[in-house]
Image (cartoon, rainbow, N blue to C red; front, top):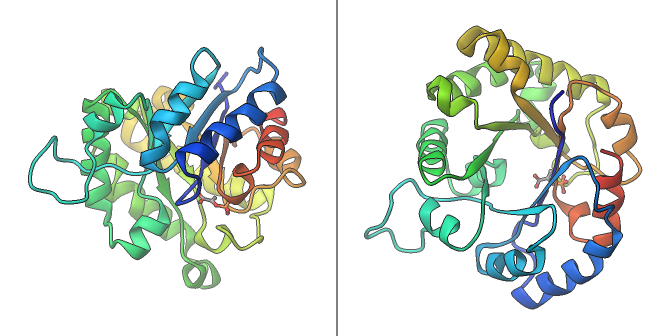
Amino acid sequence: MRRRIMAANWKMYKTAEQTTSFFEQFIPLLDPNEACRIVICPPALSIPAAVSAASGTQIRIGGQNCYWGKEGAFTGEISAEMLRAAGATWVILGHSERRQHFHETDSDVLKKTQAALDAGLSPIVCIGEKPDEHKAGKTNDVIVRQFAAGVAGLTEEQFAKVCIAYEPIWAIGTGNVATPEIASAAHKLIRCEAEKRFGAEAAQQLRILYGGSVKPDNIKGLMREPELDGVLVGGASLDAHSFAAIVKSA
Ligand code: PEP
């Protein structure tokens, strides 16, 4: 049985002070025996506040990106080791907004994933098709291509520590959540690619999250799909009550 992961991507929202007040509201709303893993990924500067607020709880903190170099003349970048030193234990990599606005490629994402693993972080690697690819019926081609160019380059040992988030870009921030059937079909394909490359057992262990307009009112339908091992939530994770309602559906 794969333990579900309910992850929050705060994008570029919440100062350290706002982060602290989120946790003050959020923690009392949780069941201390919650079976799922909760991961919250604030902006880098708010990570220390999140780590301190979440200390002693079942919540883990992650970054939203990292660079593959350990240190050096890379102005503006943050290494995986720096995230780890700040108390983060997870990191989102290859988010579509990073690919779109900052031109990250699959090979960049692979290097970042390897660096994150070397630093002891658990990576959530995002893949998913663009709206025009979805309309053209190319979803499966995109998934297969991104898997082959990204996570397939990991070793078996590295792969065992990675989660994948299927995030169709047409669903991110649009309110157009994928139907449970669409999400489940994509997850099955990812698992099938994982099996071809890493074997049946590794594929069965792989946790695949769905992301894209997840809200308290659509989470239950998604969580009924056994292929969905959790969710990556953007907008609806910024409010403590809304994210707590999502977590409870795990
Ligand atoms: C995301 O940013 O990863 C995301 C899924 O956003 P939203 O939930 O707002 O669609």
